[in-house]
Amino acid sequence: MRRLGLIGFSGSGKSSLADFASKNGFKAVDTDALIKVKSPEAFRLLENGMEEEFRTLETSVISGVLKSDFDFAAFGGGVHYAHPAWKEIYESSLKLVWLRGSFGNLAGRFEDRPLCRMSGIEGYEKLFMARQELYEKAAAFVVDTDGRSLSEIWSEIEEIWSSLFR
Image 1: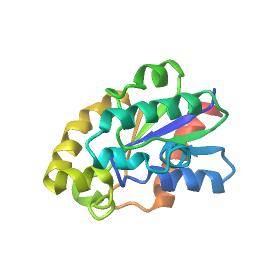
Image 2: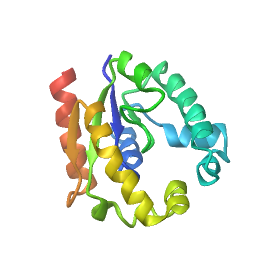
Image 3: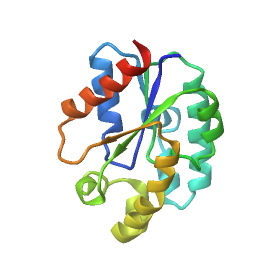
């Protein structure tokens, strides 16, 4: 199958790039958007310290996405090597691209996110640090985002796509 998944911390540009992919003729899905449709209050689970319940819902959405027809999937910031859906993602042969950005560069894009509001900026930075190795383990490719425009990042992702599928 010809499919890429985008992973990375909150604010790394996954949803924006899925939208960019759609505008460039690719079938793209965004799991966070699908979660909001399925359960509009789902992200409040994170704010209320109910991350396990949220991950269960997220895993269900990911399972549905993996069975669907798409070219690009943007996954939430919690999707990585230790996510409950990891085995299913791995077995699907989906190639994952880690959108890697520094915490300082991503700051300003995630303060309104539920886990950031719940844990505060210091707690969120600890979460960022803990996830770096998990993203690295999960990713087949890494695209650095610091100091780059969306179109520059997209160009690199298109190169990855072309190297794999054309």
